Image (cartoon, helix red, strand yellow):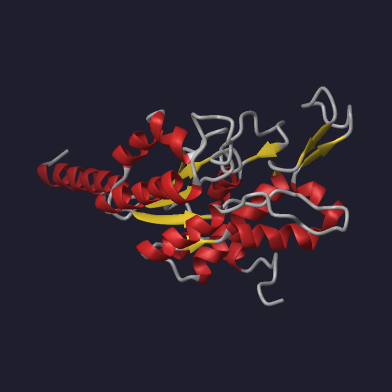
Length: 260
């Protein structure tokens, strides 16, 4: 190899390394509704963040740090936020979705009062990620499939989604209202049809479960895919720069109407 070829090879390697280092990453922090699930080939349960890699281009890396059972408080106290913060680079995105476990009023390791500690934690995620040059996005919790006897979908999250909305407004942060979008999704599928968005199996119907399963919080693969699609569509609708990474097939998919 002559000197010219050696220099060209070195330059090519350097450009490749720099490009790899500059590749944009979307970080996810949150709870079980967003988290990756083990054994996805056989496990009926999926977190919506788990579905994102198939919905975006290869030029965007998905780094899902959401964990089952975590609240904004326990995610911080367990050191999980520090791991993500240390990894953030300029231009990376951060999706923040907590609330389900912040509601656990009988668990002092997870519970947060919505207008004080919960809000403070959200502000911390925003301010500290911005200081690293990242782009934070706040998301309200997805709804539970909670229909009353009259077939009306009932709220189970109280003030937590409102606090996310207010924090996003006050700090001028993009806000993806997954509570509203998944409310539309559940209603669109109806009382019975919405069961397929979650985990409903009779005894022996699914080999992954030893007994019958009736879970209206966590998502099936279908439900997770639709929620992930809704989140990305809303990001594009708000003209976030993230939209350049979203596949056209995702943006063109019709799931819910926002007009009626």
